[in-house]
Image (cartoon, rainbow, N blue to C red; front, side, top):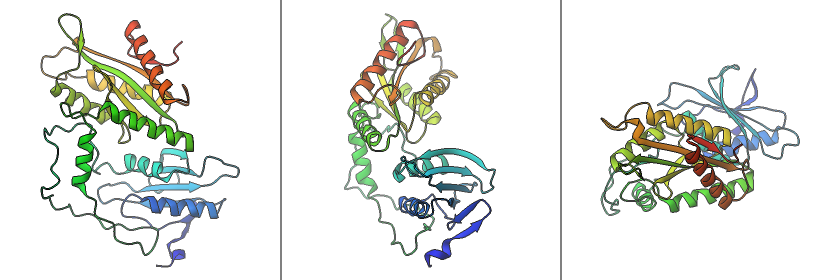
Amino acid sequence: MPLHDSFKTTAGANVRLTKLASIPSIQDLDFAMAQAGKHPRAIIELPWKAASSPTTFVLRVSTADGSEEGPSWTLHAGESLDAAVLWSHDSMDTFLIQSLISAEGDPNRALQTYVDTSKQAPALEEPTPPPRPEVPVRSARPDLPAPVELDRGLLEALQWQMRRQETGLFSEGYAYHLLIQEFNRYQRYQTPFAFVLFELALKLNDGTLSLPPVRLLHESANRIQGVGRVLDCLCHYKDPKLCLVLPHTGCNEAMQLCARIEEALLSSPLAPGLDRSNICICFGVASIPDTCEHPGILIAAAQEALEQAKRTGSTVVLFPSS
């Protein structure tokens, strides 16, 4: 259909794009951002309602005079003018915006799990099961080609290489990869991110600490995933340490996440008969740019905060601490 036919005016926005039947693609977001750039005083509305979600979401995009961070994106749960605001962010990075939308707006999408309990790497030559039927994608841009089929087997094989085979959790090397990726994003778009170093260990009879058995580690990782976001990634660091790489997160948000993780891990036994007093958990938190602007210093700062938490008996310590 002609591009101008996708525009509707409403009392709450100058331009309203066609309502989508799935979360917006990167192309949809690029198009909305381009329209906001062409109409600096307008608010561009991009609504959608996925078949798997009862909620209609509306993304409102606008540009501000003199803004160097990019257009302002605000996600609403509902179509009314007073609908709840889920988040608001200024950025030129539509990949980041799409990731934030996916985390909030589609609870039934296939989330990437922190734990893979399979013992063998997936074999690429094995036939893959037929894909699940998908809702046809409608786009705010007309005349788009059909989507390319993704090679799921290739993706699973790559993800397996990023994990420690004995636990199924992402490896320390993958944590470094994510850290540099987020640092590059910060350098380009000034998007903050946090690094949390923590010990989740069992106290042995001799007083030493050890990583929990794989079964308990899987249960812990599942609980951590339940209180975190799709964007957050749990990795090994140095036994018995684990780490979290938290995109688009400042120190305050990271501290709040640590409190939720502690509650999730200690609110009920990780295994029958396991006393919570035998579980040791403490966090060291640092972020860019709140703490520093160098990835190596970021890790060192989180390490120092963790050591202080262990010395003082605190659960969470933010670097620099008072």
